[in-house]
Length: 278
Image (cartoon, rainbow, N blue to C red; front, side, top):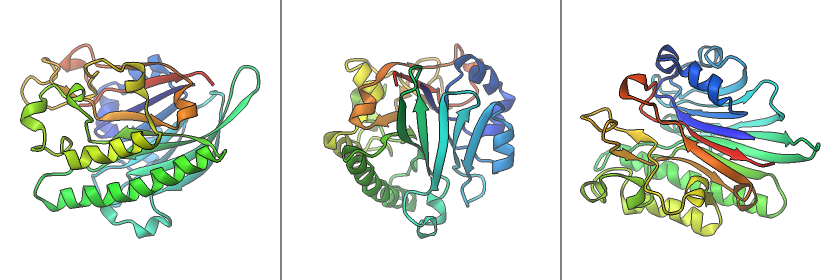
Protein backbone atom coordinates (compact mmCIF):
# COMPACT_ATOMS: atom_id res chain seq x y z
CA UNK A 1 0.00 0.00 0.00
CA UNK A 2 1.41 3.35 -1.04
CA UNK A 3 0.57 6.35 1.14
CA UNK A 4 1.45 9.92 0.21
CA UNK A 5 1.06 13.08 2.26
CA UNK A 6 1.35 16.56 0.79
CA UNK A 7 0.59 20.13 1.79
CA UNK A 8 -0.66 21.49 -1.54
CA UNK A 9 -0.63 25.17 -0.48
CA UNK A 10 -4.07 25.60 -2.05
CA UNK A 11 -5.40 22.76 -4.17
CA UNK A 12 -6.67 24.99 -6.99
CA UNK A 13 -3.26 26.59 -7.45
CA UNK A 14 -1.57 23.17 -7.25
CA UNK A 15 -3.90 21.84 -9.94
CA UNK A 16 -3.09 24.77 -12.23
CA UNK A 17 0.61 23.94 -11.79
CA UNK A 18 0.07 20.32 -12.90
CA UNK A 19 -0.24 18.44 -9.62
CA UNK A 20 -2.09 15.85 -11.70
CA UNK A 21 1.14 14.79 -13.42
CA UNK A 22 2.68 13.83 -10.08
CA UNK A 23 -0.53 12.15 -8.94
CA UNK A 24 -0.63 10.02 -12.08
CA UNK A 25 3.01 8.98 -11.85
CA UNK A 26 3.06 8.29 -8.11
CA UNK A 27 -0.44 6.75 -7.94
CA UNK A 28 -0.70 6.52 -4.15
CA UNK A 29 -3.40 4.20 -2.85
CA UNK A 30 -4.09 6.64 -0.02
CA UNK A 31 -3.50 10.37 -0.36
CA UNK A 32 -3.47 12.69 2.66
CA UNK A 33 -3.73 16.37 1.76
CA UNK A 34 -3.29 19.52 3.83
CA UNK A 35 -3.92 23.22 3.26
CA UNK A 36 -6.62 22.41 0.73
CA UNK A 37 -8.20 25.89 1.03
CA UNK A 38 -11.26 24.97 -1.04
CA UNK A 39 -14.79 23.69 -0.49
CA UNK A 40 -15.57 19.99 -0.64
CA UNK A 41 -17.03 19.97 -4.16
CA UNK A 42 -14.18 21.96 -5.68
CA UNK A 43 -11.46 19.93 -3.97
CA UNK A 44 -13.01 16.56 -4.84
CA UNK A 45 -13.23 17.54 -8.51
CA UNK A 46 -9.48 18.23 -8.52
CA UNK A 47 -8.72 14.68 -7.32
CA UNK A 48 -10.11 12.60 -10.20
CA UNK A 49 -9.87 8.87 -9.76
CA UNK A 50 -10.05 9.16 -5.98
CA UNK A 51 -12.83 8.75 -3.43
CA UNK A 52 -12.26 11.86 -1.34
CA UNK A 53 -13.40 13.23 1.97
CA UNK A 54 -12.54 16.88 2.56
CA UNK A 55 -12.92 18.87 5.75
CA UNK A 56 -12.64 22.58 5.02
CA UNK A 57 -11.66 25.11 7.66
CA UNK A 58 -14.50 27.28 8.96
CA UNK A 59 -12.16 30.26 8.57
CA UNK A 60 -12.30 31.04 4.85
CA UNK A 61 -9.03 30.73 2.97
CA UNK A 62 -7.22 28.75 5.66
CA UNK A 63 -6.25 25.14 6.34
CA UNK A 64 -8.50 22.32 5.13
CA UNK A 65 -7.53 18.63 5.07
CA UNK A 66 -8.50 15.66 2.92
CA UNK A 67 -8.19 11.89 2.78
CA UNK A 68 -8.48 10.36 -0.68
CA UNK A 69 -8.49 6.66 -1.63
CA UNK A 70 -7.61 5.68 -5.19
CA UNK A 71 -10.44 4.00 -7.06
CA UNK A 72 -9.45 0.40 -7.66
CA UNK A 73 -6.97 0.32 -4.78
CA UNK A 74 -7.25 -2.69 -2.44
CA UNK A 75 -8.60 -0.42 0.28
CA UNK A 76 -12.15 -0.19 1.66
CA UNK A 77 -13.35 3.07 3.19
CA UNK A 78 -15.06 3.02 6.58
CA UNK A 79 -16.03 5.61 9.18
CA UNK A 80 -14.88 9.22 9.01
CA UNK A 81 -14.30 11.54 11.98
CA UNK A 82 -13.74 15.29 11.65
CA UNK A 83 -11.78 17.06 14.35
CA UNK A 84 -9.30 16.02 16.98
CA UNK A 85 -11.79 16.41 19.83
CA UNK A 86 -15.28 14.95 20.08
CA UNK A 87 -17.67 16.38 19.16
CA UNK A 88 -16.22 18.60 16.46
CA UNK A 89 -18.09 21.64 17.81
CA UNK A 90 -15.85 21.72 20.90
CA UNK A 91 -12.95 22.94 18.75
CA UNK A 92 -12.46 26.63 17.93
CA UNK A 93 -12.87 27.70 14.32
CA UNK A 94 -9.10 28.09 13.85
CA UNK A 95 -8.70 24.37 14.65
CA UNK A 96 -11.27 23.23 12.08
CA UNK A 97 -9.97 21.66 8.89
CA UNK A 98 -6.84 20.41 10.63
CA UNK A 99 -7.53 16.79 11.70
CA UNK A 100 -9.46 14.24 9.65
CA UNK A 101 -9.61 10.54 10.53
CA UNK A 102 -10.75 7.73 8.24
CA UNK A 103 -11.04 4.03 9.04
CA UNK A 104 -9.83 1.76 6.23
CA UNK A 105 -9.44 -1.93 5.55
CA UNK A 106 -6.47 -2.84 3.34
CA UNK A 107 -6.50 -6.21 1.56
CA UNK A 108 -3.27 -7.79 0.29
CA UNK A 109 -2.70 -10.26 -2.52
CA UNK A 110 -3.48 -13.27 -0.33
CA UNK A 111 -6.76 -11.80 0.85
CA UNK A 112 -5.51 -10.93 4.32
CA UNK A 113 -7.16 -7.82 5.70
CA UNK A 114 -5.57 -5.12 7.84
CA UNK A 115 -7.80 -2.59 9.62
CA UNK A 116 -6.26 0.87 9.72
CA UNK A 117 -7.05 4.39 10.83
CA UNK A 118 -5.40 7.14 8.81
CA UNK A 119 -5.27 10.78 9.83
CA UNK A 120 -4.59 13.81 7.66
CA UNK A 121 -3.18 16.42 10.04
CA UNK A 122 -2.25 20.06 9.59
CA UNK A 123 -0.79 21.70 12.68
CA UNK A 124 -0.73 25.46 13.16
CA UNK A 125 2.46 27.15 11.96
CA UNK A 126 2.47 29.55 14.90
CA UNK A 127 4.25 32.85 15.30
CA UNK A 128 6.47 33.57 18.29
CA UNK A 129 5.08 36.17 20.68
CA UNK A 130 1.57 36.25 19.18
CA UNK A 131 -1.82 34.63 19.76
CA UNK A 132 -0.99 32.29 16.87
CA UNK A 133 1.55 30.57 19.11
CA UNK A 134 -1.05 30.16 21.85
CA UNK A 135 -3.43 28.64 19.30
CA UNK A 136 -0.73 26.22 18.19
CA UNK A 137 -0.06 24.98 21.71
CA UNK A 138 -3.78 24.68 22.49
CA UNK A 139 -4.24 22.53 19.40
CA UNK A 140 -1.14 20.47 20.21
CA UNK A 141 -2.63 19.68 23.61
CA UNK A 142 -5.77 18.32 21.95
CA UNK A 143 -3.64 16.31 19.52
CA UNK A 144 -1.56 14.98 22.41
CA UNK A 145 -4.65 13.54 24.09
CA UNK A 146 -5.86 11.95 20.86
CA UNK A 147 -2.45 10.45 20.08
CA UNK A 148 -2.39 8.85 23.53
CA UNK A 149 -5.84 7.37 22.95
CA UNK A 150 -5.08 6.06 19.46
CA UNK A 151 -1.82 4.43 20.57
CA UNK A 152 -3.54 2.72 23.50
CA UNK A 153 -6.32 1.44 21.25
CA UNK A 154 -3.83 -0.01 18.75
CA UNK A 155 -1.86 -1.67 21.54
CA UNK A 156 -5.07 -3.27 22.80
CA UNK A 157 -5.76 -4.89 19.43
CA UNK A 158 -7.54 -2.06 17.65
CA UNK A 159 -6.66 -0.77 14.19
CA UNK A 160 -3.11 0.27 13.46
CA UNK A 161 -2.84 4.03 12.96
CA UNK A 162 -1.04 6.35 10.57
CA UNK A 163 -1.06 10.06 11.38
CA UNK A 164 0.49 12.04 8.55
CA UNK A 165 0.73 15.57 7.34
CA UNK A 166 2.33 18.96 7.80
CA UNK A 167 3.19 19.11 11.50
CA UNK A 168 5.06 22.42 11.22
CA UNK A 169 7.74 21.26 13.69
CA UNK A 170 11.25 19.95 13.08
CA UNK A 171 12.85 17.44 15.45
CA UNK A 172 16.57 18.18 15.37
CA UNK A 173 19.49 19.64 13.43
CA UNK A 174 19.04 16.90 10.82
CA UNK A 175 15.63 18.30 9.94
CA UNK A 176 16.53 21.87 9.01
CA UNK A 177 19.39 23.32 6.98
CA UNK A 178 19.83 26.41 9.17
CA UNK A 179 19.38 25.09 12.71
CA UNK A 180 21.43 27.58 14.70
CA UNK A 181 19.76 30.84 13.55
CA UNK A 182 16.28 29.30 13.99
CA UNK A 183 16.54 27.15 17.12
CA UNK A 184 14.42 28.65 19.92
CA UNK A 185 13.89 31.75 17.78
CA UNK A 186 11.48 30.63 15.05
CA UNK A 187 8.15 28.85 15.34
CA UNK A 188 8.60 25.21 14.41
CA UNK A 189 12.07 25.06 15.93
CA UNK A 190 11.23 25.75 19.58
CA UNK A 191 12.13 23.18 22.23
CA UNK A 192 8.61 23.46 23.66
CA UNK A 193 7.14 22.40 20.32
CA UNK A 194 9.70 19.68 19.69
CA UNK A 195 8.87 18.20 23.10
CA UNK A 196 5.42 17.18 21.85
CA UNK A 197 6.90 15.12 19.00
CA UNK A 198 9.52 13.53 21.20
CA UNK A 199 6.91 12.61 23.80
CA UNK A 200 4.92 10.75 21.15
CA UNK A 201 7.97 8.98 19.77
CA UNK A 202 9.09 8.13 23.28
CA UNK A 203 5.68 6.57 23.95
CA UNK A 204 5.96 4.23 20.94
CA UNK A 205 4.88 6.16 17.87
CA UNK A 206 7.37 5.89 14.99
CA UNK A 207 8.66 8.63 12.68
CA UNK A 208 8.56 6.38 9.60
CA UNK A 209 10.89 8.31 7.29
CA UNK A 210 13.46 8.79 10.03
CA UNK A 211 13.27 5.09 10.94
CA UNK A 212 14.14 4.24 7.32
CA UNK A 213 16.92 6.85 7.07
CA UNK A 214 18.20 7.26 10.63
CA UNK A 215 21.42 9.08 9.78
CA UNK A 216 20.34 11.22 6.83
CA UNK A 217 20.30 15.00 6.78
CA UNK A 218 16.70 15.69 5.87
CA UNK A 219 15.44 14.93 3.34
CA UNK A 220 13.60 18.23 3.56
CA UNK A 221 9.94 18.59 2.63
CA UNK A 222 9.40 22.39 2.70
CA UNK A 223 11.36 25.37 1.42
CA UNK A 224 10.66 29.05 2.04
CA UNK A 225 9.49 31.05 -0.95
CA UNK A 226 12.03 33.72 -0.03
CA UNK A 227 15.49 33.99 -1.52
CA UNK A 228 17.10 30.90 -3.02
CA UNK A 229 15.96 28.45 -0.35
CA UNK A 230 14.78 25.82 -2.84
CA UNK A 231 17.76 26.15 -5.17
CA UNK A 232 20.15 25.85 -2.20
CA UNK A 233 18.10 23.07 -0.58
CA UNK A 234 17.82 25.23 2.56
CA UNK A 235 14.74 23.36 3.69
CA UNK A 236 12.88 22.01 6.68
CA UNK A 237 11.59 18.48 7.32
CA UNK A 238 8.15 19.24 8.71
CA UNK A 239 5.97 16.71 6.84
CA UNK A 240 5.74 13.33 8.54
CA UNK A 241 4.18 9.89 8.46
CA UNK A 242 3.83 8.81 12.09
CA UNK A 243 2.75 5.21 12.66
CA UNK A 244 1.98 2.79 15.43
CA UNK A 245 4.82 0.28 15.87
CA UNK A 246 3.28 -2.68 14.03
CA UNK A 247 2.42 -0.59 10.98
CA UNK A 248 5.79 1.18 11.02
CA UNK A 249 7.46 -2.23 10.92
CA UNK A 250 5.80 -2.83 7.55
CA UNK A 251 7.22 0.31 5.94
CA UNK A 252 9.61 -0.72 3.17
CA UNK A 253 10.76 2.47 1.46
CA UNK A 254 10.06 6.17 1.23
CA UNK A 255 10.72 9.06 -1.12
CA UNK A 256 10.40 12.81 -0.94
CA UNK A 257 9.28 13.81 -4.42
CA UNK A 258 11.18 17.08 -4.66
CA UNK A 259 10.54 18.94 -7.91
CA UNK A 260 13.45 18.95 -10.39
CA UNK A 261 13.52 22.75 -10.43
CA UNK A 262 11.93 25.78 -8.79
CA UNK A 263 9.87 26.43 -11.92
CA UNK A 264 8.41 22.90 -11.83
CA UNK A 265 7.13 23.09 -8.25
CA UNK A 266 3.38 22.95 -7.71
CA UNK A 267 3.61 23.56 -3.95
CA UNK A 268 6.15 24.94 -1.51
CA UNK A 269 6.14 21.43 0.03
CA UNK A 270 7.15 18.12 -1.56
CA UNK A 271 5.14 14.91 -1.23
CA UNK A 272 6.34 12.33 1.31
CA UNK A 273 5.56 8.88 -0.10
CA UNK A 274 5.89 5.63 1.87
CA UNK A 275 5.33 2.06 0.68
CA UNK A 276 3.94 -0.37 3.26
CA UNK A 277 3.97 -4.15 2.88
CA UNK A 278 0.54 -5.19 4.11
